[in-house]
Image 1 (spheres, helix red, strand yellow):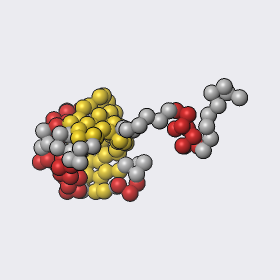
Image 2 (cartoon, one colour):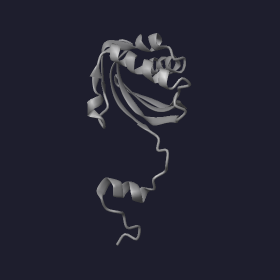
Image 3 (cartoon, rainbow, N blue to C red):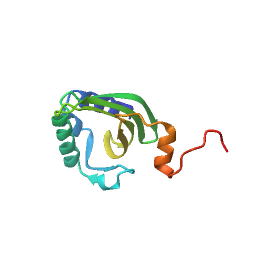
Image 4 (cartoon, rainbow, N blue to C red):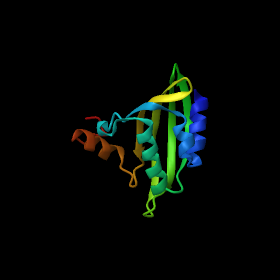
Length: 139
């Protein structure tokens, strides 16, 4: 199954929409559990999404950090980089879980997020999540 991901990576870096689409089942189902409103079904929507990505980030590049196969699921850690047409840098990192059947990606769970432009320390991040700042003294 990692072979499918390797082909996907090559197609993404070549901005080859048709090559990418050929790796997805026509009824591909995509979820982003942290963003439930982004769920969709269909290769056509995947194609449209990536057409917009390549148009908006003309120098888009991806790197596979690590891929692990587990049954018919392939877990991949990705790094996506480039520059948007408005001049802003683009950088996203995360993990995808793709179900692969008969050589096609049939579903995906994406956990991709923009990398923070301004670093937020762990104390502030915990406070943002919980409403309470951690006490490093443990008291």
